[in-house]
Each structure stands twice: as C-alpha cells, then as structure tokens.
Length: 550
Image 1 (cartoon, one colour):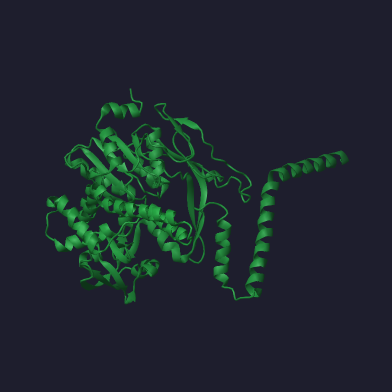
Image 2 (spheres, helix red, strand yellow):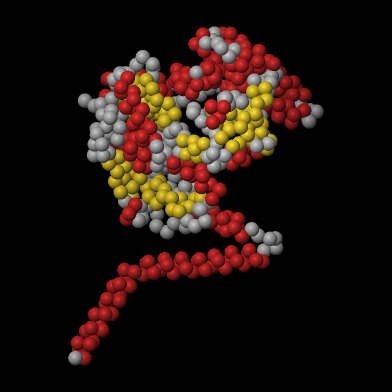
C-alpha cells in the first residue's frame, strides 16, 4: 500500500515536472506582461497627476502607445478615431465627399483632379481651379492639411466651395452635395497603342473593389477585339489587400496555381493562397511595370507572375515590403494595425528589404530575412530580400534640373490653365508644338522666371564668403566671371530641354481638352518603360528568351 502511494506520488511529481516544462515559457510571458502593465500604469498615473505642467491624459497615453509601437516596424500602428476614415478609404475605397483631389501648385491650393459622375464634376468644378474658401474658411498652403477634414463629411450634407478661375479673373462659388465617393483603383484601361491588340491597365491600389474592376474591364475589352498582350502598370502602387492581389493574379495564372503564402508566429497566420478560377487571359502575353514605389500587394502580384514565368517584369526594383498586417478593432472607435506574418512568393522567397527585428532589443526571437537564390518554374534564378528585381531593368527618363524646377514651381500646370482659357475650343491634336513652346517662353518672361541651378547657388555662396576678405579680389573676380557664364548657360537651358518642356505641357493640356484618359495616352507616348515593355511583348523571340521558354 505504502509502495503504491509512493509510486502515485512520484508519478504525479513527474507529471508536474513535465507540464511545468511545457508551460513555463507561457507562464513567464504572462508574468512579464502583468508586471510591466502594472509598472506602466503606475508611471502613467504618477506623471499625469504630478508633472510640473498639466498633462492631457489621452494625448499622453497616445504618445506612449506610439512610442511602444515605434520600437517594432512602421506598419504596426495605432489607429485612433481621427484616422479611421483614412484607413477605411484605403481598405474599402469609399468616403463621403464631392469628388475632387487637391494639391499645391506654386503658392496656391489647386484642384488637380475631378472624378467623373460626382457633385464637383456635375456642378462644373474644373482641373486648375484654385480653392480659396471652404464654408467661408480661408484656404492657403499653410492650412492645406485641414482641407480634407473640411471637404469630407456625411453623404447628403451640403458644402460651399469658392474658387478662382482663369488666372484669377473669375471668382466662382459652388454649393455641392457630399456623396459616397467610390475611388477607382483601376484609373485607366483600354487598347494602347489605339490600333493594337495590346491592353494597358493602370492600377493605383488594391482596395476591396480592385479585383472586380480589373475583371470587368478585361471582359469589356474582350468584346471589342482579341487581346494578344497586356501591360499591367503597378508603378507607384503602394499595395492594399492581400486577397485582392490573389484576385488580380487569377486573371492570368492557371487555376490552382500558388499565388502567395504567409507564415507568422501564430499558426493561424500560416496560409497558402491559390488561384481558384480559370484565367480570363490565360494565353495573352503579359508585362508588369514596377518601380521603387511598387510595394506590398503589388509585389505579391509581381512575384507570382515572375515565379510562374507567366509574364515579364519591366522597370526598376520594387520597394521590398514582405510583411502582412492585420487590423484588430479596439474600443472607442479605434483599431490596431499589427504585422502578423511575412509573405512568400511561390518559389519560397520573402522579398522584405529591411529587417526590423535585427538588433532590436524589443524582439527576443528574430526570424531574419536572408538574401539567397530561388528558382522560377522555368529554372530562372531569382532572389529573396531587397524587393523584386525586374526581368528587364529600364530606368525612367531623368529630366534636366530645369524641368524639375518648372514642375516644382507649377509652371506647366499654370501655363496649361492659361492656354486652355485663352483657346477653349482648340483641337488638341492640331496644337502646333513650335507655337506652343514660343507661347510658353513668353509666359515665363511675363512671370520673370529665372532658373538658378544648384551649382550657381553654391557660387553665390562662395562669392559672399570671399567678398568678406579684401585679400581675395582675384578669386572674387574669377567667381563673378563663372557666375556670368552660368547665367548665360541658364538662358539656354530652356531651349536645350525644348522637347521635354513640350512633352510636359501637352500632358497637362491633354487633361484639360481630353480628360483623364487623354492625359494617360499622352503620357504613354513618351513613357520609356511602357514603350520598352510593349516592344518586348511584340517580339516573340525576346519575350520567350526572357522567360526561358524553349
């Protein structure tokens, strides 16, 4: 009997040891969490009540939350009530407003886009109108950040906008009804070049409706004529919803193809996503345009197409965001967006560029992103980490410094307004380039525009410094002579970049005369990356060679 009890006691002891071994880690983390919550709470209360200046308890706590999350990665963020509408827009592509986009051009807050079918467009607001008042509140570049909250609002409510038009000659007032604005993810689709069988799609984000938009567009275009090739433009696309990226891939990849997989600390975050439908364009040649601002869902699509050798990637290396976020609703109309997994392309590579866990004391176990090689379906070598490298590297045209200066100061935009209101009924396709350039030069003269390159500014600084030393007269004379030469050079810069200037002006004019579609087509005429992609799609040998197709 004693022996039996002793055996049971020993057995129970073994069970305790074993289970303590299994659960000690979890118990430890709960102890650590409770200890530090208690410590954090005491510090929060102590400072809030006793700091020398009065503390805003809510903002103080928000600062603590931001600081805590800031030790992880830039995508793990607290979403308070004031930002929730912006995240809803990114996710669902909807908001309450009047259908305009604004930007700063020169020293004015200007309407840069008007969405078709909404209140602003129906009431007659135009691209180029300068916004001066919203519900009697003055608008300037200094308070431009407040405009979004002023213009957006509950659908059905009325807002008054006051604008200046036609070079400040006309002051117009509009009473607009806010509506539910559905922002298109697919901002352009159509056959381009116009007489070709090539489709051009410009996708700007991966909001909830993006997959449906692309599928609907392809179905519509297929009724017009045969689609032999597609250029999908993901340049500047920051991403969006992962499942929408899968939807986009389903238009091109064979059914049951692996699109992407995710792996995280929680077993539930480990998933694989496959195409579930027969592709609407299974045989059309495909090119995807990417650049350094193509991220997240854009890279999921690009990686899947590249790994399955379904199409070519053209442009420059992508951003390199291989992290997956989950949004968890919290109390008080707030949410937490937290990184819960990394995603992997079909070949198994994670393209995350920055390893936020490395050398981070807040992270106790590091799952490092290592750069190594992988193979596509056709045995082409691709690499993990650092974004996605295109199959054909084509850089964007690097315009001269004077073009960037004119763009920054808004002169192309302003001149387009001036020209349009001076010639409202002119046929865009009949505009003479030489006359257009001459008119632009006269316009710049009237604005007393002078181009000062960075080198000239540095010489001015040297002249100032040397001028304070009476012993350096010879050096000062030489510097002034160089400055004079620079001024002569600057005068010739406009003529040197004549073709580029005409290009920029005509893109702006196309938006005034032909609308957004016309503007996109005008841009594509001079788009180096698009033109290279289309050339490859038109050449069977080059296309097959890039994809290792025998």
